[in-house]
Image 1 (cartoon, rainbow, N blue to C red):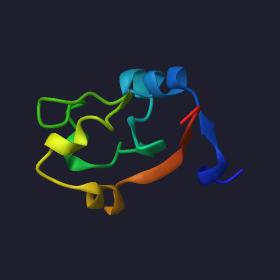
Image 2 (cartoon, rainbow, N blue to C red):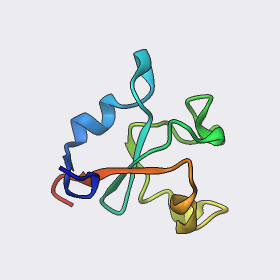
Image 3 (cartoon, one colour):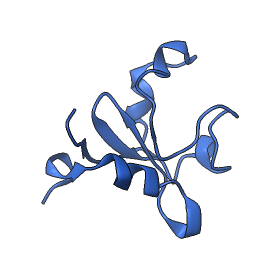
Length: 84
């Protein structure tokens, strides 16, 4: 199954928060991304505001960057968030 067809539950998203060696996932507009390799997420918190394992859709309008941040090489698509 390709990443674009994989369905990720809210629980699975929350569990992938970097704890105990799990990947760091975030969601935006129904897409789940792995940001484990991104320098801005290395401390397990992005810009002292956001934790991995969350849907950040509502947070992006206040961010200093736009959707193009999801096209960076360190960001990998994992799948789609269930029921979105």
